[in-house]
Image (cartoon, rainbow, N blue to C red):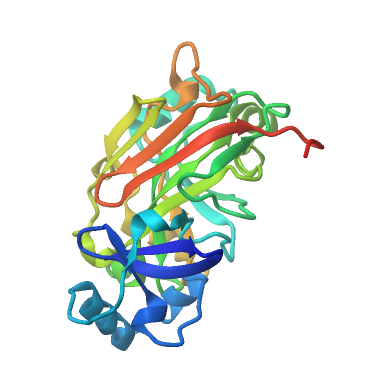
Length: 302
């Protein structure tokens, strides 16, 4: 089951895709009077009774009217996170090696590297990256599997990690490499406005066996740049959730970006960074494709 946030007639709504992925069953039609447009509230309220009603609709056992997918604008499933995005750095061995050669002060840690990424608003598929090339012309892409937390938890043991997951999405950790190098830490270089993109949907966890093993790919202007699989994680999802939740509460709707494989722009020789007009596609086949184009942003220009 895929949860989708969309705009129709100028209004944001949340629904689920039908099995053919040609139409949307809006939650407002499954639950008459439903007015929630924020995905975190849907995640928080997804109890057993609500979930069973969704499965009934998804399986075509109701007369819920559908909306053709081609008639709506797809939005980021979570547009504004409650907290900063939780990120795992260099979580593939091949990316760890290319990062060591490209980042001046990089030192490989013996365990997973965790950092935060600020996002006032997350881009959805089809939205433009407003590139601040005046601040840093080394604009990079990073395809990642995003884990969406489903219920509150702290000190979660790895064997119970899946219980705290709602689902999965595709995340593009857009990065400014000069800023990342200059500051000696990653928060600043990864937190410019519009430098987070996610979507097009959240795939419910029931659709994937656990532990999750999915292909992770990216393309720039149609050229494949990254191609790996999450079975190659250095820190798997249970370890990540166990680590992050030690003494720190995870809440419904929290986003964990699990790391990117080799093939980013800074890892090429010479480096191949994104520029005005480039199209970047991040792909995880069970979830879909996240597509964004680079548009140079000029401060002060309307």
